[in-house]
Length: 325
Image (tube, rainbow, N blue to C red; front, side):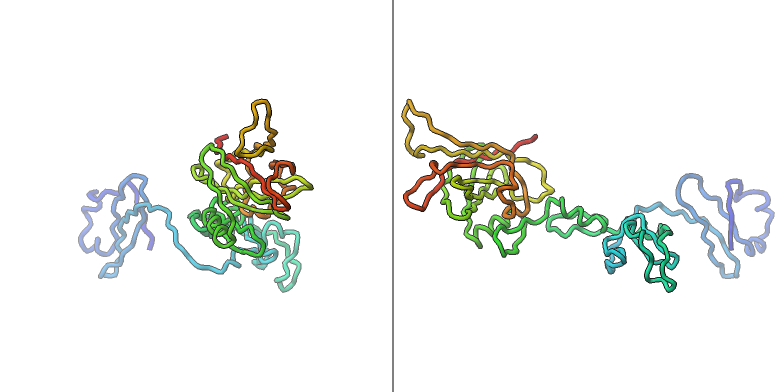
């Protein structure tokens, strides 16, 4: 039963007063709805006498609701290329779906075969636009559309950093990786302080040696790699953090001199110093970055090494400063 109501219907109108009680029981009574922008609808209730009573029911507009559901992810994937579906989604005349990248092909599921994907599926567009999942990285509470998950993971600031040692599959946040490298791989850890130079003397083995620098006051961790390039020794510094962490940036300054570190040079003699001052590269896999992939590093001639015999060590200083630009 349908009922209509308008503002010019009054409860106390003469026509309503003239109607008897029996007549009013047989016909539904229309109540005047309050004016205003609230959501309203007419709800028809069945009375005991068989007649319908139409009354106004006011509904307060609610906030958008969300529910958590489990579903087969293949529903959100293109059946042709198996990549996540994203708007616009198309279908053939048989209702089979395809992403925008697969429109050039023909449907192979239709019985007659060869049907083109030329019909926009707006219903599926709405589904894939709002189907979201939480980023799987620990500590990240962001929900992103399913078709944007891979893109988000590549820049997520909570992405795990991976072990530098070949064959080790450990991955975790930067502090966890530092603890793992120190405990599981006995990697030396040196701590430096804000804007202060720290002296390090490390062995120069073949082919390379790695050690960690933790900037306590700055909160950063860096992998230093010592390697050989001909007779020279190279020292690189890579910040260990997710690629999505663009800030803060770090300036690394390293230098070495060819004089005995604990003996002051004569007043008339100047010490030769090699120096490198650069912005640190960041990586979740710092051990996979080779010297030839870096634009800056410290190059030390063999005369700067100390020690007798084949066991040589490189004394050098390092200072790490956090920048804001």
